[in-house]
Image 1 (cartoon, rainbow, N blue to C red):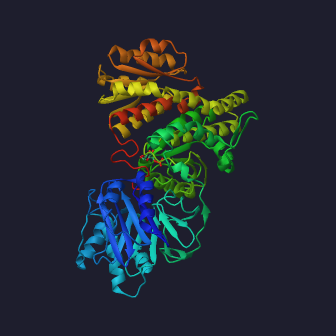
Image 2 (cartoon, rainbow, N blue to C red):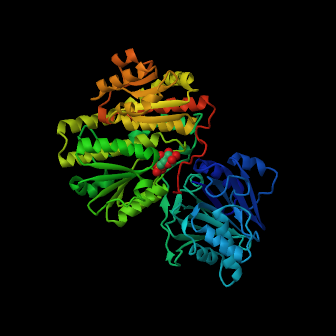
Image 3 (cartoon, rainbow, N blue to C red):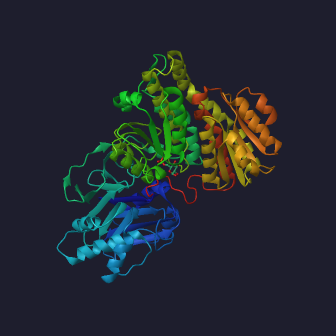
Length: 611
Ligand code: G6P
C-alpha cells in the first residue's frame, strides 16, 4: 500500500522516479508526487494517477540527481493535492514520503501545535516531518539523528524517505512494518517499496529490517537501528527480470498473468516434483516435516485470495494427510485471543509477503511458541523473513491487483505440501500418491486447455456484463473456487457477487434468485456431482440463469444449464487449479466490457501494508 521510490546518484533523478512510480502504481493510485533537490527542495504533487502527475510537471523544472516519489493509497485524509505526498515540514527545509500509519499522530500533532507548528494537510505523515524538523531545529543533532530520534516517538507502521534542503547529498530511509529495499548501483543508490523500480538499474539489493534506518549519500550506505546500533547490510541478488514487469503484448497485466498460469504452476513444482521417480520434496519445509506429521492441528492464516487458497488447502490436508486444519482471516485471528501453543503449526499464505494483518498474526502465533511456515511469492519480503521456514511459490511478479497466477501457484505449493505430509505420514496409498504426482505434472497442460475457453468466456461476458448481482456456487474444493470467482468479479467489475456452498444456498441466497440472476456453478465430475445437479435444478426452478463449469464430455448438466464451459477432466483434489481459470476469464472480460480499470480497480491496492 503506497509506493515509494527514491534516487541518489549522478543521473537525472526525475525520469527514474516517475518510471519507478509507474511500476509501483499497483500499490495505490489515488494521488502521486515527487520531490527533487537541486539547490532548492521542490515538491510537485497531484491527485489522480502517476500519469496525471507526469502531465502536471511537464513544464516544471524537475532537474536534480537526488529525489523521491510516492503513489498513494489514502488512509488519513481524502485523496486530494494537499494530502498527496511528499509532505514538507513547515519551513519547507525537509520533505518526507511515507507508507504506513502513524498511530499516535493525533497526540504528537497536539504537542506540536502547542509548540507553534502549523499543519497544511490532514495526514498522519505531516506530523512526522514536523516532528523531525522540531528536533533538528532544537540543534545539536545531525539530519539522520533527527530522523532517528523522531522515529523513537512514533507508534505505528512506516516506510519513509526524508530529504533535507541543507543536505544536498543525503537521504534517510527507515522501515517498521512496511517494506524498504535499497538498490546498490555504481555510485548510485535507489530506495523503493519493492524491487520493481530498481531491477532495471541494478540486481544488488539490501532489504531493511524492521526498526532500521538507512543513511545514504552518493558513495556510501550505512544502516543502524532506531536504537542507534550499527548494522551491516546484507547484499542480495535479485531474481526477477525486467521482462516479467512488462505487459508483453497483452492488453492488461491481469490477462497476461492469467495466460502465464501453465508456466507459473510449472515453476512452483519445478525441482520439487519428479512423478516418474515418485519423488516429491519441498526443501523449504523438510526440516519441519517430522513435526508436521505429528502435529494435532494446522492453522492457516491469510487474507483475500490467499485465504481462499488456504480453504483449498484445508480440504487437501484434511483429506490426504488427516490433520485437522483451521483457516483464519489474519485480521480476525490477531484480535481474538486465539488458543495457540508450541505444539501448533501455522501456515501463513501471502502473495506479497507484506500484508500487515498476516504479519501481525504471525507475530502473535510466534510469541506463543508456534512453528510458522510461509507460502509466499515475493522473494525477500517480510513474511518469509519472519517465518521459521517455508516455500516460495515462484509465480514471478504479479502486477494486476486482482490475484490470479499467485492463487494457482499457492494452491500448487499447498498441494505439494499436503501430499508430502500424507506420504510421510502414511495416510495415502502409494498408488494414489503416484497417481496424484502424475496428475500434478499434467496440470500445466490442462490449464492450457482450460484457457481455450476464452472466447466462450467473452461471449458470456457480453451477455451478463450488465447484471447487478452474481451468485457463485460450489461444493467441496469447488466452494473456495466459487468464493474466488465471486471475489474476482467484485474486485474488477464492481458487480455484487457472492460465493456460497451450493447446498447452503437454500438457507438464504435462494431468495435472491429470479430471471435476472446469473448463477455460476462449479459442476464438474466429483463425489458431489449428483448433489450439485440437484442444486442446479433448484436454481432453474426459480428461473435463475445457470452458467455451469463442467468436465469435458458432460451431458447431464449440459441439458439443464443455460450455458456451460468445459474444462479437462482432473482428479477432484487438484481441480481448483483448473476450474478457477474460466472464472478468472469471465471476470476479466466483464470488467473490460464495463470499461473498468482492470489492473487498478478503484479503492484497492495489491500490497495491503496497513491493518
Ligand atoms: C489485497 C490484494 C489481494 C490479495 C490480498 C492478500 O487485497 O488485492 O489480491 O489476495 O491483499 O494479499 P497477500 O499479498 O497477503 O496475498
